[in-house]
Image 1 (cartoon, rainbow, N blue to C red):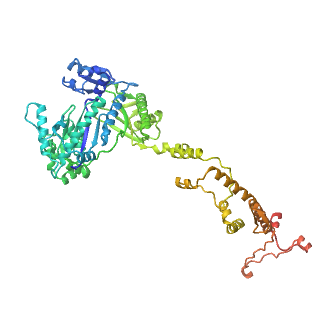
Image 2 (cartoon, helix red, strand yellow):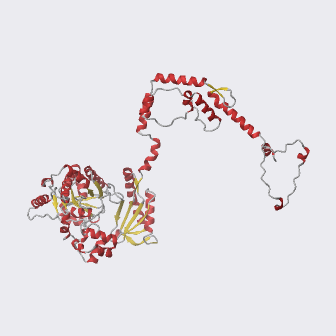
Image 3 (tube, one colour):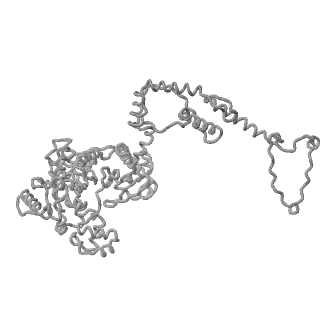
Length: 600
């Protein structure tokens, strides 16, 4: 675990930064981004640090924020079809990811403004080529467990970093702290590159796994980064509430605090693995036992595209959806956005989703969902399938919803790539560049050669094969070219170079070969008559036809099976000759093939 280096990069008030880049006059001023709903100034979804200093929070409405901070600038999110359009923030997030990818590390996007990075291999390469790191390389780095008593925060931070660097010696046997030092320098460079290329600032957390890096990322913001040495995990856990840990902020965290009677992560370490498995099942128990000691084995998945695509809308208070008609209307509106984003995602990533999820809630704090299979990706089909899933899960009587819905969302996931399918048909119509070049070279370099009729490949059985074998024995040099089957394999460049001759020699040899084949004669293996080789095939066909004619007209001797004993069989009628047989004494007694066709 100590060999892994994981970082979390989190953009600072990202929506506000995007709006400030669009409108530079907002820089340095208190800004809040509000939703499209203008009731009481709209709901705040992002607040920059200048506004936070005045007491504005994300849980306020726009009018309330103005009461706290009269000079605040409220920027409304663009809306399409009465719904927020967040495409500008998604595109800005892609710019940041593109910069991060320049540092050759595994990147997993966690949200629009967050990404986990696995720096393990990149750190190994840095250690092999560069080992000197000073405090000047870490101008915005904080280290957990290395705190200074100086009143000046910046001087205290610098002093703590220098102490950490002195204790993190590259020559020591346990060099996990030094690996964090190299990673911290790399993240400093990365954050600087993000600011230079996009104009956005970000914060970061650096540790040995995803959960620890997430924990320390928000400790020093904005535009700062925090490092957590593995030896300082107990120091961090002493005052860390259980609900602050990733994956423990919901029901599992509440159950954990209730059953164990704990409030801080340091209290979880006193429970054994068997006790935790007994109370929270095997899988959860093992995970709780490990995370209490700062151990987490979850890997960073190299994923630059989201696992799901969705959108949602809230209907608070009197705006709650009460009829089936209202549900159908908003399902249609949500499906429009989802399908538009799906089409764009297919163009960029050539993938299609397989699952459709409908989410809804009837009260604040609760959430319900229903999942179904998705086979069509057009807006009408997606809206129809979503409505079917929703109607199966909620109570609707006389087109009225029994309990009004305050939240509605649509999302699609379980993506599968279709790159091979998209390219398979095109391969049949568009030749590769190599084959095109080969054909062009052949057309340019080779002059036109007189066409020579090629004989069919030799028949393995029958008189033709016997004749061709005799020709090979008599004059193999003349007949090898004619008897051999046409070649379909492509020769290599070296073989072509050896076999290519001058253009004039080619034409002369071809003409001689054609004239010789036209005049050559050979005796027929059937009748001994001298026949031209080019006419031999037709001559042999004549012999074959004669043999078939003889076989058809030859009398056939009937095969009489042995008769059983007459005593064991019932007596049959005696055979009597017909009038025609008795009258014509010269008639043949043996039946021929012709009698089968003349029989009435």
